[in-house]
Image (cartoon, rainbow, N blue to C red; front, side):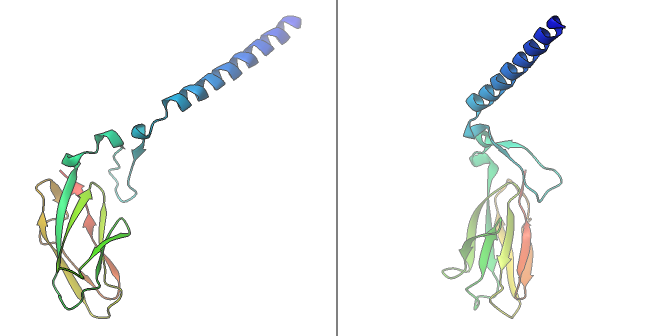
Length: 147
């Protein structure tokens, strides 16, 4: 019996030591650049290391307001307002893969039309000439897919 008690204590001790060692290694190995992120807006979720994000994985979209009398229309990227048409009827956006681009025309009762009039060569979606019409709503222009 004494042998089994000693073995039990030894196994318990080893388990605690290895558990503590595993936690220590995880803490020492934790760096911001090792983080990964995914998007909930895709079935093809990609795990992207933050180190891998560079200028080649960035695209440019140019969105034009077709109804120029409405200047308080906002463009949203991933739900956050990034620009509006108060200064110009065209907006140039820097976008990344899986960004969700939306137009917020909720301040106006009338239909408001916007159109993608320019894209960089590495953008697969939204395509050139994609348009969206809002009617006191927020409408999706598209999800960015880079080539």
